[in-house]
Amino acid sequence: MNEYVLETRDLAKFYDGGRVQALRGVDLQVEAGQFVAIRGPSGSGKSTLLHLLGGLDTPSRGEVLYRGRRLSDHAGLGAYRSRCVSFVFQAFYLPPTLSVLRNVQVPMCEGNLSRRQRQEKAQTLLREVGLDERIHRYPNELSAGERQRVAIARSLANGPEILLADEPTGNLDSETAARILDLLGGLHSERGMTLLVVTHDPEVAERAQRQVHLRNGRIRA
Image (cartoon, rainbow, N blue to C red):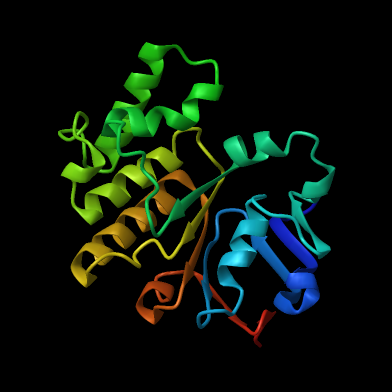
């Protein structure tokens, strides 16, 4: 049985007819339950790697495996994205016309939960991230740190095994960033999730159990 929850083999991604090589043959193995920081300067391929791991994009060469099975073999790639893996982005991506409570429910709408069950689950998740008193507010009424907490709660809506965070503290001040990292670290420990965080910040990376360094589209030894 394969011991890795995620694995890449000779993973490459090219753009502009091959003139831009975002990734150049990346071999990576991630064990279930690990907290991994993916580091590197801007343009090193960090976000591209995360998008490929999450099934948001397809490789130009090589493959991504989830528990030993190639993502390209998954007939229901949408199910992988909605049930197995979830994202937290730097820019939050919260629809401004939806309340905090409804934002968290968005990923649940494709499931079989009733409206009441979705609301109750969203309330539980918002309580977990410390926003149970903000459920009827809208994104523009929240601080940046609160918006990221909503985004984190939303990412947990379908109980993903893997959480992929792309510069989750990039829009936050240092104090708020530390609180968000505490939250992510706590969720990783309590839920036993596999957590991959893209960052250029060494202070963020130091919280991880393992660091992977990318430069020019390759893993640097």
